[in-house]
Length: 158
Image 1 (tube, helix red, strand yellow):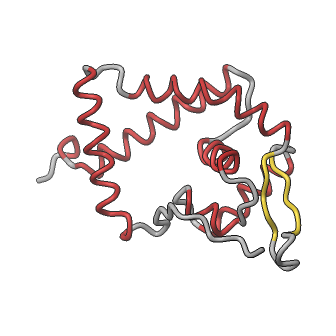
Image 2 (tube, rainbow, N blue to C red; image 1 turned 180 degrees about the horizontal axis):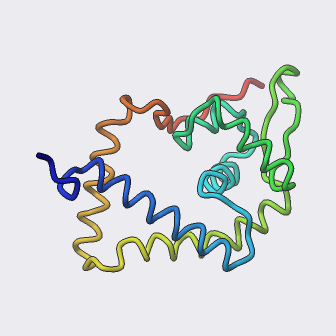
């Protein structure tokens, strides 16, 4: 018989639940209506303005089919602007709005606190080892995901 407490998959799922709960609590305390995937989208658009939805989905390792709903909610909240691409009239590009920048500026220190919360019980050395092992494991399994991480930004045609 298997013991759930020794199964990496079960423990990873539990840690994800804890992470989501901490994230939601910090956002609620700050009066922000923001999910972790919405935060990831805002942060990525801050660093890479003008992305299309498909590229954004790859850069945050999110399902391309579902990213549309995430972007629709960010547009409704006026945190993201969606415009016709200047190089391809059929495509839409995404940019952080001024309000989106303000929310990102408020949320980022809170997200940093969530990250610290998650490993607060570890020593500094254990924290580094833990993060290295998480990175190694997720990188090794990236292509097995239904939403693999894609670090590259598609070149925009001029």
